[in-house]
Image (cartoon, one colour):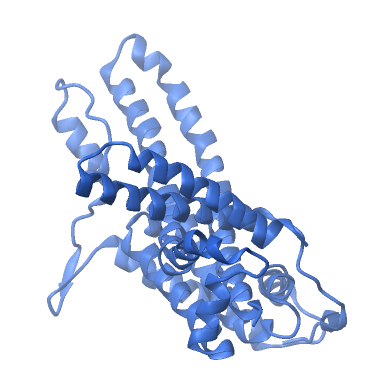
Length: 264
Length: 74
């Protein structure tokens, strides 16, 4: 679509990619819901992750085959690095399904950003990271309240021990703001902004290269550099995509650990 | 699923990782938002122009102290 628009407006100069490139037209409508490529990508990710883990775990052989080995490796990475090592060996098991689901859902949807033909990071639509952050927020607060009780949970969160009493006037609002507002906000914004900016960066180099190629002359000779840089940045994006999935899950895990461990 | 016998290993919280950095940033942000915001409200109420800045500085300083209380003295 973008290509056609560019070609049809040839001679009008390069219009740089912007936020409007993230507004995808609906492909079809089901019962009043407009289904876009993004919606389909989310469903695709769920199917892919489900199929992968189902197939990997189906046999449950003592000597794992290649697929089972990959599945177990992926699972135990999240289980051990993000679950056990952060939450601690007594409590972490309950949260492993949540963390594994969170990590692979974000990971697959992020990596969609550089998979040919899919090429759109779902998380660059703020609604998706916001929903995930809301789930995380709900989980760590619920866990803390259930473990310590409503009053004790907020008391432990708002009044760190070993501080002169008058200082609480300044510190407690900050703590309350952090657990109720800043944490979910930064979770969602970090993931959204990274995916949005990364996709925009790729658009700039690839579309810029295409424009240079079509404009002819000296710019056309230089266009391979733009494409080359686009390819380099694609690999850089892969790094960012994996890292962001990791960070989101790690922070969720840290917040759960914090909610469980608050001193009474 | 194959049971991993690593449960028995003692696992203590790692001293600092990439996650802690982001937790600390969240604290700094909250401090500046809360006390900078309080200063901004005061400025609007009293028609002055310096409480926002004072609030931001107090908030940032309090956040650093809070990070020290939470993470710095073990």
